[in-house]
Image 1 (tube, helix red, strand yellow):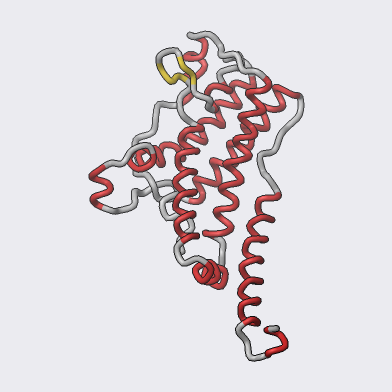
Image 2 (image 1 turned 120 degrees about the horizontal axis):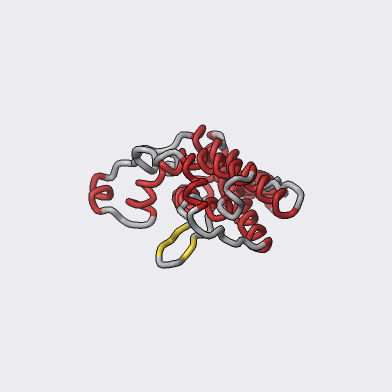
Length: 234
């Protein structure tokens, strides 16, 4: 069972955008967005959520061993594979949505890293740090974006007809994305509340281990129930 068959391989490469070094000039040319403390809390909580989905997914699908995968197939032949594909697609969309441009057109704004980075004065250290981290996140976005457009947000006929996975980001790209996002939230929270905030949710891996343990115990129970020892069966 593949972990995220189309998570790390879901987009074809496109030329990168111009360097973000001009972000200060662009931000200075328009009013600085006002971001409330509550919005910072909502943003960081969402980062915790999508990071948790990723951790759960990697433990169950990518990092599971042959015995654990056989247990999943024996319990529900197609359920775990189907859920893995759904969550993998969600993470591709989530990573791209997180890094969308602040300007959504027609006077609307997107709730993205650029919005929060631009909420600081262009000459401030916070602005420079946050845009540097945003630039690191752009590396994965560049590789995933075509797949998001062709299979996530839309259903491209030619891509579906060919039935071939689109090349995309490596596991190293994903690791650097999460590292940059964690640093981004840490800096943002320090500037807003005077203390750092970590997006790593420790309990999610415990949930994954509990799920796998429950599957194993269920198999042991079934083996005893169908065994030759009548006293055990009773």
